[in-house]
Length: 350
Image (cartoon, rainbow, N blue to C red):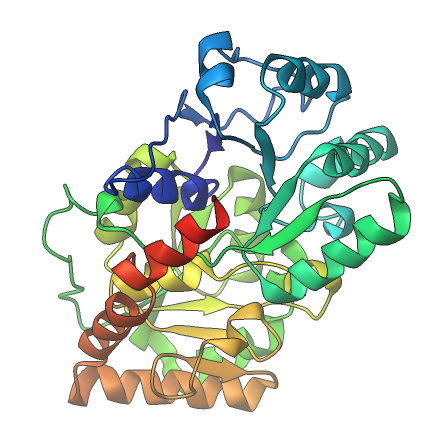
């Protein structure tokens, strides 16, 4: 495995490898962990696969590949005809909104290479059942000679990411600290009416914390001109959990416009926030709709009054009951690397 990471990035590729290493039947090797370099070309390969590892491996797991790797895959199969090639597709690259800078790098040539590379794989793993169905149809319809199996591999949280974390850092101020984590420009602008009404409803009871890419900061400052916004640039995977803990968030807004891209995202961020006891208010069509029970482990909203009602409920919960403890308990009981969930992962790689 050779994932590139920024924040949550390919964390879902690394944790299964770490957890599988605890079993008696499986062994995984991670060749490197790198911080994401947005200036690097999508075709730049910075790691070499050791021939000894190719001969040893039953599976080789790749991140999304945007260059012609047919020769590389052929060479791997020559060295080890029985090895299974796996690509973990973390998002729907065929429907990335134009506001996300990555879309400017994904020219037709790159997307065509990704499409062809899907057909070279034995298995493609995704973290969303809707995306699994879409991608299997996509491959079957466009790549007639492909024998690629698209597998839904649920995202899980692992104690590996939190083992060196200090105790959860809680907000001690009287203001409610509300986070926005890496929203797209369109998603952010969908909150314009909500923010205007929030100002009238809550006044100075709320302060906003933006944690994300530098390119979005000017949009955040423009949209939140009537608020004092605390800006934090995104960090690498190695520092992500500590950084998230240090923000002392009471809640996070997850706005999302209805589109193919949003429907096909996983819910890794929702799970990570739950692990820190941070409730979310999410667009009702956001992928986390499947996992949120309104008022129990988060809030769903579509129109402005629903966002405001959810915030009012969150303020009330924050004062009258420990909402965080139920979130933490739920996520570790139902979405962590228990023996049952590890069995599901290992059953894929047999």
